[in-house]
Length: 237
Image (cartoon, rainbow, N blue to C red; front, side):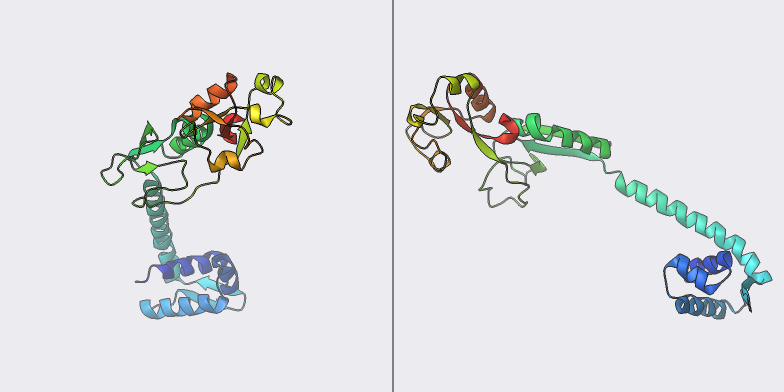
């Protein structure tokens, strides 16, 4: 038996006409008529009397109605069980990311994820180091980089906005508009090098004097008045 025929049978039995059943099923009325006729032919019985005012169940149809409703209930129950179980992902998920992404950007999203999938055990490793995903040192790596390793498969999530930041005290004691060369950059690379990130800014005349290889350390250095730095806006704003 094609169990899908029961949907058509139940729709006609409940609505009392082909057109009303077709509307309920979002199909053409000729499709419903054809399916009902085919179903009756397959079973070798008449399920409906075709009357001028609509379709009326025969005695056999009324008996089938009870069984069909029971089958429908079971199918709906199976759907709920399968769909519900499929959504209940579980197990350990190890995610590595820089600390600054967790503390200043992603933690609300991580919280929403744990609420959505309560059976997942989330392990967060905060590091900028390259974890070996193939050895399952981590399942997912989130990185701030333009050049991810070739062996990683993934996608760009976003382009983080950046800006030049200084403390209020630093700006107070430096003429940033007329004497930018007297400012002091806090950079990433060797302190003697000048790189594209500061060349493209309006303070390219300022030398790179200090170095901090951690974003949070750069932020604290700026707040302490050590110099200016190019920082992600989600962190420094």
